[in-house]
Length: 149
Image (cartoon, rainbow, N blue to C red):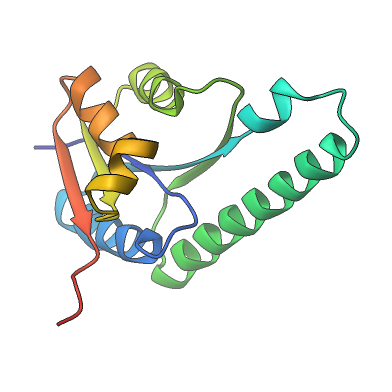
């Protein structure tokens, strides 16, 4: 049913669950799998002349590379073939970067993590998963971190 599964991964507490669920699911579908991590340079691009902006950018790249390596190691342990891509975002609309890459790749399913931030945090920061859902016709499988009792 699904041939090209697109999985954006961040470095949140739900990321490993998303990663593992996607790897499990792809076995059942025998589909292509693309993991993407987006390093967000938005805060750097507005103040690129500021002292320390270069250090901030280097730190963000270092963190992004750690996420990418973790994804690659997990894929190798599960012996599954998948592509892993690092994208850069310089705007406030991370969902646009993800949707454009997914569209260009031909994705026919998104697997997204959601964080249950609460209504106030969601109001302040929005949600990338919600933005993607509002801007694409591609089906979405949401993976959540189960709440602790």
